[in-house]
Amino acid sequence: METEDSSDAKTESVRRRRRRAKETDDSHGNSPLELILIVAVALGLALGIQAFLVKPYRIPSESMVPTLVIGQRVLVNRIGNRFGDPNVGDVTVFHPPSGAENANECGAPHKEDQPCPMPTKTKADVNFIKRIVAGPGDTLSIVDGHVVRNGKRQKEPFIRPCSGGEECNFPTQIKIPPNHYFMMGDNRGASDDSRFWGPVPREWIIGNAFATYWPPKKIGVL
Image (cartoon, rainbow, N blue to C red; front, side, top):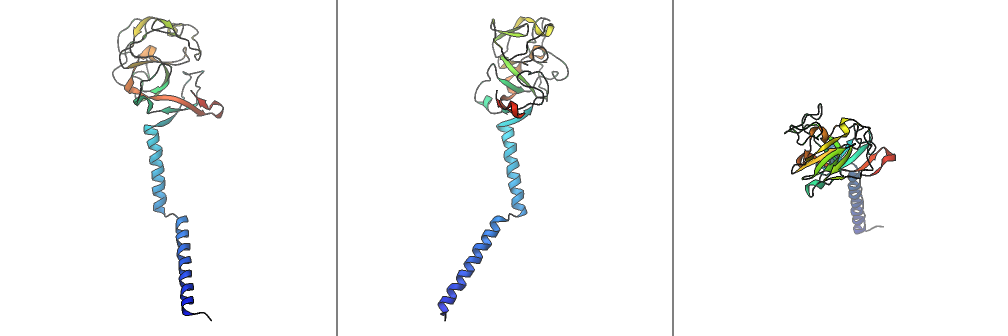
């Protein structure tokens, strides 16, 4: 026959097991409010990462062939240029000057055989992706689609050369203004770039593309 103390102990043990079971059940069943908060936090983190750290971009044209093809997707580092200067050779996403998206509008008078020396004063809302080929204080001219920077023809094994034509030759050099960067597509005969609408102010640069993640066969670093 059980004693009263033994019965009380069993009753308390049953109560504890029920409390633990209830706690376990609650931990597996999030309320609608909790689910909403989880989704909101996840979206906030994703948007924050895109706004301040890394953002994906889709390549819309053939101007960067053979390096990047239409439909290829890249990741862009949005924070790197806040702590250091952009580098010649970087594949960069930026806002072009206004007028670049629909027409090759230069911001300053120049000779026909000379690259555009200055952009228009306002930036466009669209994004372009090109390669930095010259920076502040550099002199630049274009011969047969190849960059001549500071008097030296650059080694550019990554480009698709020009087949000839006015867009391939701007032999009269310009000097890149302070805080500006000259952008060109790797597909030199099929790119609307700084040759026609001028170098880009640093503050219009969004970031440099550092990796490609789509299609799978193109996964890698740039």
